[in-house]
Length: 384
Image 1 (tube, rainbow, N blue to C red):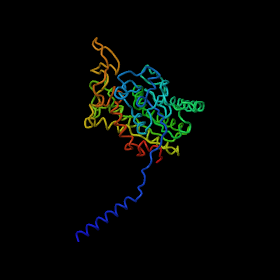
Image 2: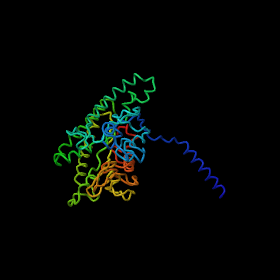
Image 3: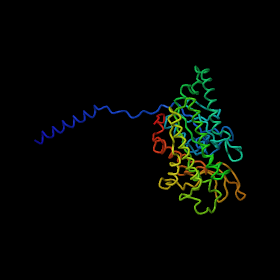
Image 4: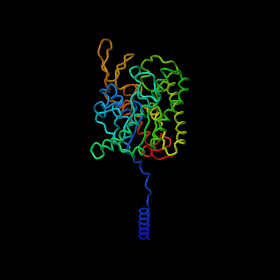
């Protein structure tokens, strides 16, 4: 009986395996085939715009990945670079860069210091870019018109391989990472009540940019909210004895982060309305704030150094020599050099994030865990 029981059991197992092998397993939802990315933003996503337009970014910027300055305010890649990698597309050339550029798979209109609203000051005062979001949209319109015309002239030559295809603008992913500098300008020039009153206009201007791109055929939009600006180490460079309650439990400027949270709330509300206004658009709101604050608040457990410590530059007491610059401290020439291991730092230069931090944030947002709707960037063409 034991023998036959074994035979029957074996026969039953083979039947089950045959049945399972014959079941057609439904394919997972296919990836969106984005042919290009068009990005709008500030230094958090600038891949060479402000560096081409004004003074080039110098070493040691770019050292961790590009092994030379690459127009990025970091030691290596930015979140937009990790988006390109995730979508299997090349890194974006800056629209303002005229040398060695390739726009076959998109362009980057972001510039360091950009704001959503135009500011009445020059870049030489506080570093605010003249290329506010409305100007970036104008540049996109010109880019689209001129590259379409140029492609028709050179489509039978090798030059065509560096130009976008007119029919692919509607299939591209449009990304936004801008708004942080609107808050920083507000902190300098306005009371919190005044800044709060300006927020609806700021988010409406971003919404107007999305609407314009939609009218130009854009359908997929990936929009970052603003990060915890109060956690940037630069905010503490000239603060020696903060008053009780000025900082939160992680050393961040509490009131500034509260304003960022309020800005993000208004941005999210506006995006909800935008989805109703643009019936064919797939718009994803990306909670970069939560990712960055999660990284900062758990830095030690995640293997990072003190998040308020700066990797590149000389910052001792109230003496500050910015990353890559030289200056005098007590009559001695000091160079703002890089730390030995940027990969354990969150802040690269006091204002911008390190490549390691950018990668961590990218990994925790591009998978859809901090987005609304909760979809990965590879599915951002799908309206939900």
